[in-house]
Amino acid sequence: MILLRVLVFILGFILVGLTVFSAVKTFVLPRAANDPLARFVFVTIRRVFNLLMRQTRSYTQADRLMAFYAPVSLFMLLPTWLFVVMIGYTGMIWAVEGGSFYNAYLVSGSSLLTLGFATSDNFPTAILGFTEATIGLILVALLIAYLPSIYSAFSRRESAVSMLEVRAGSPPFAVEMLARYNRIHGLDKLSQQWETWEMWFTDIEESHTSLAALVFFRSPRPEHSWVTAAGAVLDAAALMRSSIDTPPDPRADLCIRAGFLALRHIADYFSYPYERDPHYPVQAISLTREDYDRGMETLLAAGVRLKEDREQAWRDFAGWRVNYDQVLLALARLTMAPNAPWLVQSRLHD
Image (cartoon, rainbow, N blue to C red):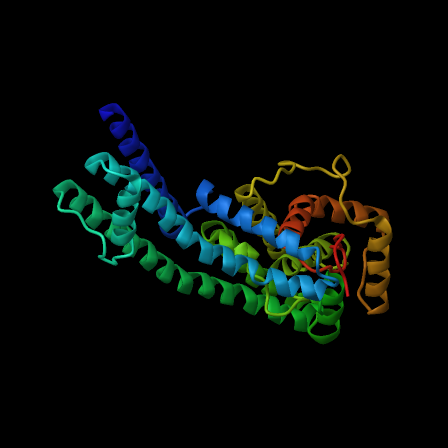
C-alpha cells in the first residue's frame, strides 16, 4: 500500500510539473516550443470545428465559423491545465492523507479554485493545498497577461494586411500590385515596400512561433488573410527580380529571403515537411505556365516593361517561387485561407 501511495504521489507530481512546464512554454518562453498538451487542445478542438464545417454552404459561412476556432482553443487551454493540475494534486493529497479519492478530489478542487469549503488539518496536505492555489492563480494571471501581447501582434499584422488591399486589390494579387504601382507611383517606389515587408516577415516569424495561436487568428474580413498577403508580396518581389525590365533591386531579394524563411519556420513549428533546398525544375511549383503568361499579358496591357526572353523570365520566376511555394500552400490549407490569384485551394466558395 505504501508503495502504491508513493507511485501515485510521483505520478501526480509529474502531471503538475508537466502542466506548469506547458504553461511556461506557451506563455513565457520567448521562442518556438511545441507543447504536447497545448497541441492536444488545439487539435481536438480543430476536429470539432471540422465536423461543424461540414454544415456550412459557403466560404463566408466557413470563415465566420473558423473565426471562433483560435479564441475557443485559447479559452479551453486554461480549464484543461486546471483540470490536469487538480487531478495531479488529487493523487498527491490521497497519497499523503489516505482515505477516499473523492475526499482528496474535494480538497484539491477547493484549494485550486480557492473556494475553501474542503480543508484538512494534515500539515503536508495544507502545504499541498497552498501550492495548488498558488499554481492556479499563476495560470490565470499568465493567460490574462498573454492576451494583450497576442492582440498587439495581431494588430501589427493586420494593419499591413489591410493596407495591402489599397495596393494589391482584394484578395491581393502580385500582378495587380505591380500594375497599380506602375500607374500611380512608379515601380522604383517599390523599394520602400520591400523594406516594410521584410520587417513584417521578421515580425510574424517571431510572433507566430512564440505565440502560435496567432497563426489561426483570422482577419476581420473574410477576403483578407496574412497567408494570401504574404504570397502576393513574395510573388510581386519574385516578378520584379525575374520578369520586369528594371535594374536589380537587392531589397527585393532580401524581402523574398525574409519571407520564405518566416514561412518555413512557421511550417517547422507545425511539423509540415518541405524540401529544404528546392531547385526548379527538379521541384515543380503549383503555379502553371498559363497562369504566369496571363499575368504577364495583364502587366503588358498596364504599360509595364517586361523582359524580352519570356522563357528565361518564367524559369527565373519559378526559381524564386520554388523557395516558398510548398510552405505557402501548406499554411493556406492549415489556416483555411481564402482563395486568391496564384494561390487557389479546394474549399467552399460563395
